[in-house]
Amino acid sequence: MTVGGLILTVIVAFAVTAVLTPLFRSVALLIGWEHRPDPKKWKRNANPHSVRIALGGGLTMFVGIIVSALVCSAVLLSPLQHQLLFISLLFATCALLLGLYDDWRSPRPVVRLAFQAILGVLTVSLLGWVKGLPALLAIPITVFGVVGLMNSVNMMDNMDGIASGLMTLTMVGYALLGILTRNETVTSLSLMVAGATFGFWLYNRPPALIFMGDTGSLMLGYLLAVIGTFLHGANSTIGLGNFLLLCFWRAFSLRTRLLWSCGGGGMVCP
Image (cartoon, rainbow, N blue to C red; front, top):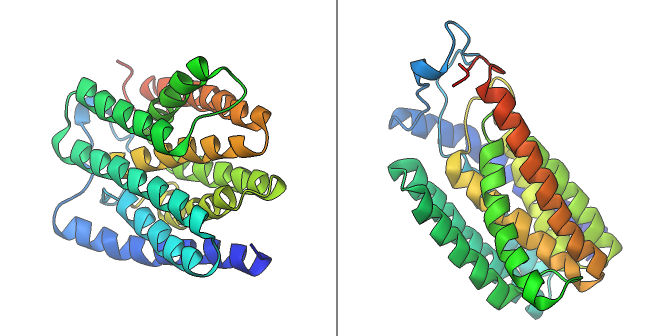
């Protein structure tokens, strides 16, 4: 993959998302798909948002990733890489639909976890698992990683710009690892996500104008897990490092969730 191809991949994802997000926000507010803060969870006059906040921003990132993938696959990737990219984005679509259903209907946690576990098993079956450990350990760890990272990004999405900003930085790091290990699938997919999340961050940074919702956080969490899984191809230590990344994301998401719920940002501590 050429330098020009890498630049094209990230620019397309960024441009599509950056252009679509304000348009989608207007439509979402028009139909009433917006955030309504629970007064029981906020201290008096502590809500930092002075304007209406649209929901469902994950859809704009998804479109940006898909458009970039179409451009990238048409001119840059080999047939095998096409297959890996197609399966990854197909499963990411399933994660997005689960998040969309969660945003609209709020199913029981056990139902959501069951679907996430099924997605993890399908990922192991068709895309592989992390290396560096015996298969009997690596396979369940990979499934756990898919479920854990989907929920970790979801938990991170409770403060303006945190989830989208950290995803951008993480994907840039993954892209660099992809370049170093000559893994074009990792490099291209990471840049697609980085461009889309940065384009969305422009409107999600404090004070946010739009939230990604479960629609976006579950999709991004799945892509975070599957890209890390792809990295096992060049070095088993890198594949095992994805598990360590899971531990970091999980610990950081729990920490920020705790700080937020106990007064950070104006919420009433339960």
